[in-house]
Image (cartoon, rainbow, N blue to C red; front, side, top):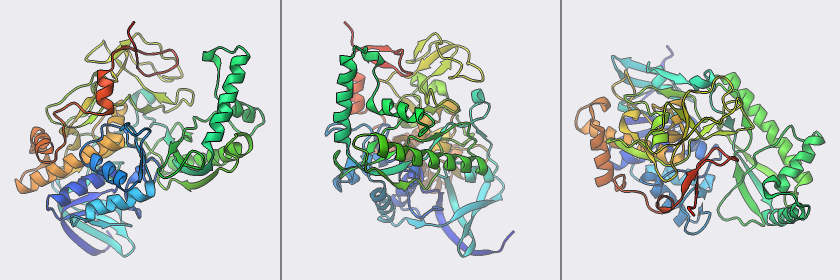
Length: 507
């Protein structure tokens, strides 16, 4: 073992500065614990900021709600409409400052440029975490450690069991997507050109369900001419302070499939492949698409767009059935209301996988006989019925998913929490990820002040503290977008053109 050149001591050490780890650090510092957050890069936010995924999906509550409100107060938040609180976007660079501020204003410390490389164990407890730094090897001693690495690095080093990939996909991970930032687009000009193209198709008598967008039609031409290899699901998330006449946006449209996200060579292949896709698409937009003649890539994500890697085994493993059926838990500490969020491991045609399979209809799941094809399930189609979450419902994320097996003084937060492959999306997106961090922060405070360990804490107590002391309204149905959706009258239907449930008005 190399010589330790520096030692640090604290109540809680949080490893990983993504939104889940940051949320944990905000909570523990506000509760008076000596808090240090360690991040291998040079800014906070993880994929949300450094990976150019600055869009807040999920139920915005707790620390996440404060984060969004503070960004909006500074003019750094963009809503799709003034009253729409679903999926607002924010400036990824400004958000880095905001996350730092939210930790440091309560005396939390941040240590950058520190990469976790080992742990020192004392029985079932982590005694210290070892970091590689510019000054040499550093040992950090704490009462509680929180793994916010996204990959379960600390948990794996400490001997916690885990799994990688989906069993029904032979261990492959979800497709990955490197985010990027683009500038100087005239979306108004493109919309006008697309409207004219739609009219042209209508005048030719092309049925509505056979018409395509102008972008798709131009992609077809570029494919024929050898400029593009295939269609790209190109979508744009507009950033604050820009107009459609001079748009600045991020996109996460460039995918790699057949991934194994705990292998450095595989990850490198993905990054190189996605860089090439971006370069080709930039040239395509400049040459073919009205409004995009002056488009430029102005930023590449500095973090690989990984959606899942290690998933730690915890005291409870969130099941895909829980997500589909809207399962509620007495120790629920965060909520997931969105569609199934499995990005297809192998199929660019299907792109998303918005359903799972149940032995028989259950809970509030919307079910039907299987219609999925061999491209959706290239290895084997699971038995039972297709099942999807009711868009008017949500599932809880229980406290026990944050508590790993084997180790007594460790929490895991964010996408590496204990969940099945097809339930991973419930942990991964920004709002519930921050919820897991906030809950782990509360439980850390509880454990230290009551001289207990995470496994022995009753998760119902953590939930109660979140509601009564932190103002997280887990005991109430959410308002805003989710309340409007819940009140919508209609028959849940899975249309032939998609893999999600829509509500069709009753006659």
